[in-house]
Image (cartoon, rainbow, N blue to C red):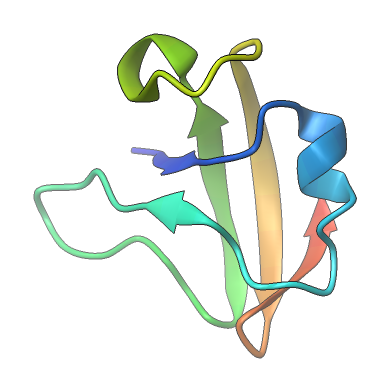
Length: 70
């Protein structure tokens, strides 16, 4: 599963390194967010109506801050 993020582009997500992640949980089986660790996120404009293009990314968090995006 993936979490939804509120960034219009992957570039905008990468520019947010060092900041908290703006996201919405989507799993019915428990939270996927990890304050320290990696997980997959997606921007789905058709679902959240935030504009931009659809993208997926692997995000690594450290101490509740974005450490890296790939």
